[in-house]
Image (tube, rainbow over all chains, first blue to last red):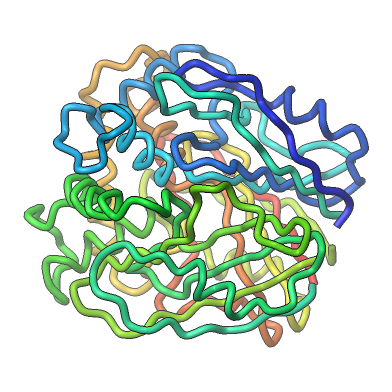
Length: 135
Length: 135
Length: 135
């Protein structure tokens, strides 16, 4: 292991937010070759890699995820509001961690790949990440 | 690599089962900092991290997953019953492995995160995991 | 880290393709124990582990994924055709990377687990993978 650090993200509004640069800011000393693990310590938000260029992709993601986990469904777990249980379910679909190769001292993602924080709650505080780098 | 071991879970009924303590039982010697990989050797069950407190979350997960992959759909792959192909599909949604940071000698998950074995079959035997710890 | 290499897959038709042997061909020198990371550098295709024997499973996956992300939906992101945005969404469901334990010098998957390249576009070129092996 090279290093491990915890990062507090700024609070985000509900939706899909590119955080690639925010992550890279905390990775000043990347090894030549290795691996970056990003872990989200929450169950009502998610992490994913997806298209980083066209903002309409993020709009469509919101629509599509709501179609898969509608707030109109009768949930048993609803104390925190209609967006609560759908948020847990969406988090199980995207997952809460990413593993990205490091090659030539940089994150070796495809041209169109960006790192997304998916905020599934209407109102949430800041989210915590654990970053771990191996070489 | 620090160590790698195979674990046989007890048979679970169809549904969502917290196995955090079961996993930790097999991890007596965690390093100060590192990573735990949990790998499920099956295609009709899944692993996920999700809300560990309220049992109604597990009830809602069953309902929601059945909504996404209904048994009433006309599947080509149906020799083992109506729950067979939905189980494979659900497994592709949750995934079959988890990677969790270790910090200060403990699994560094959020307060509300628990490790779930998702049993998607009506009747299944015990499931096999491979645990790998890096430091 | 033991080694890291980039692999170009042959172009695949839309659908679910077993690539286990293709991957293993690039892994001549596996360690006794360790981990294989497979990373897909694209946002309109996916990787998953699933049932490797019955071809009807792949047929049902196509039907089920199209049910979850139908092309008939009104997407904002549609410049590249009706299969474009559904491909991004499906990619978020399967994910773009896999982490597989290596035990006894072999990939330690279950009997029925195969590695799938999920090609979500109607027409796509070859796809790039980054393979990383730890021991």
